[in-house]
Amino acid sequence: MKVLVIGGGGREHAVCMALAKSPQVDKIWCAPGNGGIAAVAECVDIKATDIDGVVAFSKANNPDLVVVTPDDPLALGMVDALEAEGIRAFGPRKNAAVIEGSKSFAKDLMKKYNIPTAGYAVFENSDEAIAYIKENGAPIVIKADGLALGKGVTVAMTEEEAIAAVKDAIDGGRFGGAGARVVIEEYLTGPEVSVLAFVDGKNLSTMPSAQDHKRAYDNDEGPNTGGMGAFSPSRFYTDDVAQTCMDTIFKPTVAAMAAEGRPFCGVLYFGLMLTPKGPKVIEYNARFGDPETQAVLSRLDSDLFEIMNAVIDGKLDEMDIKWADNAACCVVLASGGYPLAYEKGKEITGLEDVTESVVFHAGTAVKDGKIVTSGGRVLGVTATAPTLDEAIQKSYADVEKIHFEKAHYRLDIGIKKG
Image (tube, rainbow, N blue to C red; front, side, top):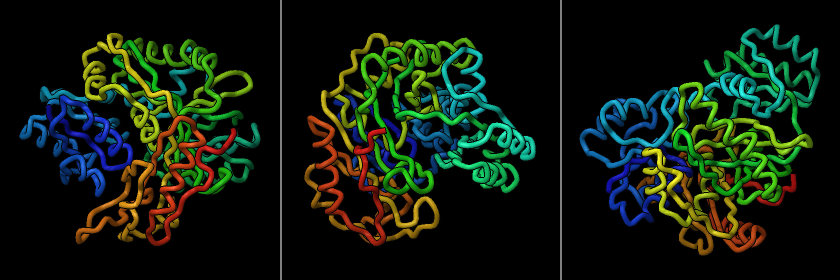
């Protein structure tokens, strides 16, 4: 079987490696791929958002499955375009991917179907938004409505910070059209947990819990990034919490999307806050999270290709998906300056010295036979072990063997207690 994976980051590297373990898969392409993915898949020079290019390639090469992993092509309708040509595709259609593509849609959905989430209001006028902030005070959360590469959220601890975030988004155009509308949310407290689930439109199967680290620096300081690391399982996601989430959040969300005529098929990511009043939804993603995927898929003991086909066929309830009884830790090595200005083209050394971890490439390229940096998040060094503490130890032992100029990483991945 032949598979085409869309995307070129650490998440796609993890997906490609999981698919490569399937005895049914004998050929993988990845568009556009990266320097590390090239070791397990043939990289194809097509942008992840080039729907016409992906459809044309698929018609010419006849993959048995196209896996659309990033948020942008899903929101643009890549799955719809592939299916219209009779090409089998994994991922939600455009009308379901809106659950991530529009935060105001997601909030309204939760309100309509009584799914627990933070109180909120939606604004397109900065003066009205600022008046709301002054009325409600800080701390308060400002979110760009559309897709903003994981950087559209400001947790404002002061009114001034909140007002600046609103002006940046609506008036300053910081996030382009994605920030023309903002969602302002009540500030919640409690541990954050990420739970990904395979969903076939009516059935869902959750993956092991995970927790990521969004801030650039230790102790959750600095600007929001796309994620500086992740670990699995969460220390707080007990069986009782899992059951509450299943009953009040997971199943109701899948049912709500079906009731709205937007059946969700693919991977649905639940970003949760375990508040003193119970679990609440912070956000939905319409795909595998990054870097949570690197940690979670490292624990998968079943055939990912089979799972994806069961999702497409609406037969997820017939699958018995197995996960290892272990733990995983993924530490991200980023370019110095990320998520703001950073340099590319720095040679990476020491990869051959890694012994205890799998290194997922996120922002790398091959230049003159050498692996060099080509993005903000460069590598995800991911280790598994019987316990989380052991996985953390193994991951950091290998991180120290890898070098490139101005490399930056957090020292507290998996250690945070809240």
